[in-house]
Length: 92
Image (cartoon, rainbow, N blue to C red; front, side, top):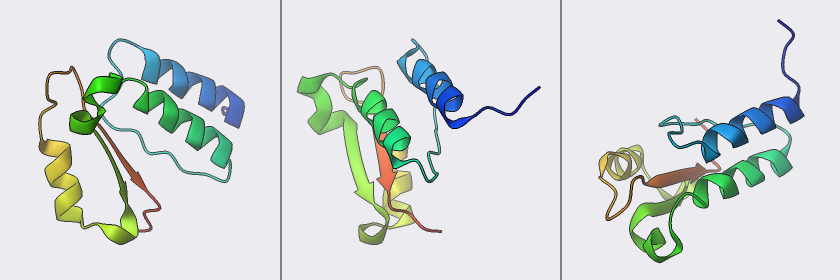
């Protein structure tokens, strides 16, 4: 099977994010910031606008700790099917 190019991979992951049951974790990285930004927007769109304060967290690697990220990821969504946690600019 041929390796997916960036556009094919983007389309596949975007479709997964928009599916009724997306995967629990996605790792988005690469030189194409356009694709990663669009996929983050797809993930964010899964959270109802009126529930974003409770079910959407956008964290930055330099401003947080692993313990905080894990704690947020383990917390249950509030009045929604899922919670979205985005960790940006993380360099392990």
